[in-house]
Length: 208
Image (cartoon, rainbow, N blue to C red; front, side):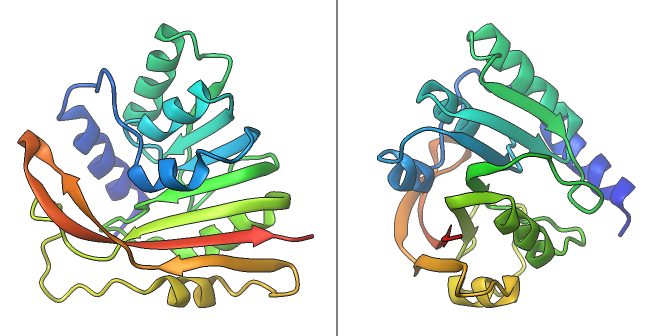
């Protein structure tokens, strides 16, 4: 499937629903980042922007990217309206073709899944190399299928956090896996529907 197809798909996903007034942050981000000192953060696949807005309110300088221009433009507008325009830079990036410039203290990739071709291991490898020493790469993936997910393939298999780490292929002398597990939580979907889901959580820290 082509990049054009992916852009069209994700623009359509975002355009089909109204812009969220107060998108919530992902619960794993809140859990993992609340106690970290703010710095420069890259939000890969920012979507509705809940993570970026939460981080900016806590003093982080956020670079937020998404393959959908609709998502990026909505986030930029929302940030400006909330007085956070100086803390959030939102832009469209197709990670097949380009990666945001800069060095970061935190790179967050929450649910960076797509029905289109994406070499996620290569993207996450580039991300790891954009960390400053002491910086962290947080990857949170689906470990189960929620009833409201766009992907209801019964044969889908979600790689474990350790498998994701192995696929990235980082030098253990320079990067350390600080967390790799599969916690469960009660998630809330469209219309207030709830279900128990599994997250695959991977946290990698750059030492040097």
